[in-house]
Amino acid sequence: MVLLSNAGSLLVAVLAASTHMAHAIPRPQTEGTSPELTTEQKEGDDCDVLHDRIVCADESSLLFCNQNKWVAFSNCTLGTVCKDGSCVFPESDSNGADLPVEEESASANKSDVDVAETGVATDVASSAPVDTAVPEASAEPVVTDAEATAEATEATEAETSDTGGDSSGDSSGSTSGDFGITCDKFKEAVTKASSAIGQSYPTPSDKQCTSFLAGMPKGDIASAREAAMFLANILWESDGLQAKEEYDCQDLPDWCAQNYKTPEDAPGKTYWGRGYIQLTWHYNYEAASEGLFGDDRLVESPDQVATDEDLAWGVSFWFWKENVHGDAGVQEGNFGSSINKINGALECNGGTAQDKAKKRYEMYKAILPIFAPGELPKETGCYN
Image (cartoon, rainbow, N blue to C red; front, side, top):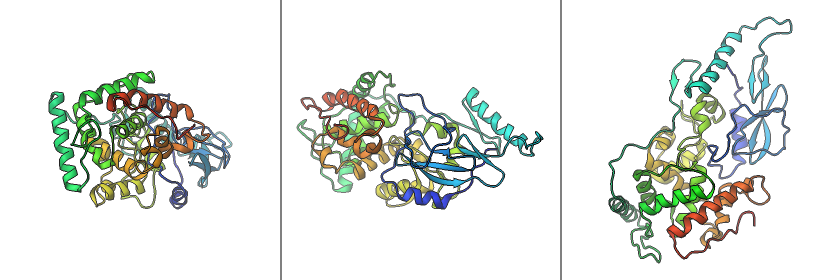
């Protein structure tokens, strides 16, 4: 069994230094890395918060990726050594004799093989199969575009009435808060954005569309242009609306349970990336729950962020409202400013992943003419 020493108090200190780390990207558009990462990094070296978590500093200590820099995390417990980002018992002693834990380690290794061959992770402690598929949106009856849009319109009007928000639209003449965006336009936007970066995202479901339209007031989306900005970023974060839960954590839930642990967690709950924005860490679930509902329901039941379509969008709009919407550059129509607010340390300002930011922009250019005809895209605010 792979063992990782408990360093909760140190992890809290690490997290306290980070800002807006709400997402843990689910490997969109590229081959993903597994949690068994490269070894023998040095404290202060660059890392990639989108893919890196924990690595070995040497044979006895670990580093944690925070704000794209490796920082000290913990030391391995007595009798273990650091290997592939985890503290494990050696397979044999200096005389070549098997150690008592070898059989258990072999069981853990077999579990890894099961994941690779069957796509189903096995809890080593209970031998209970864990479903690794991304939860599907609940089955919905087929409805026409007009019916779907009418449903979303009613929902947005109700939301606006409840919150006292401004329901006025933009130059499209819409008064419902959807800015003239229909489900046909939404689906066309996803398809064209996909093609713009050489991908083949599946056509969104009607439920995905209506939840998107109904959720816009939660993000304080102020125009069709801002809706296009939001959607372009969400498509990138969620692998084209395919990932409502972090891929690595579907395959290796025990690993994620250990490595996202903080002392504040509710008993038995883990706060890895969920929702289309990939909301991550206890403090973000707590803030999103308070912001959306005025209580702690998402802390007590974090899984619903991945299984409930409305919540998958809801936390994403909440994050946008809290961290992106109010930026002056975003309100001026500078798409790069939205990237900078979401993942600027890595993709903007000399970051090592500017190629990803440029793909976000290509998707935005494909979406904007559909949502806001006549608007010209502005790239400014990230890498230029």
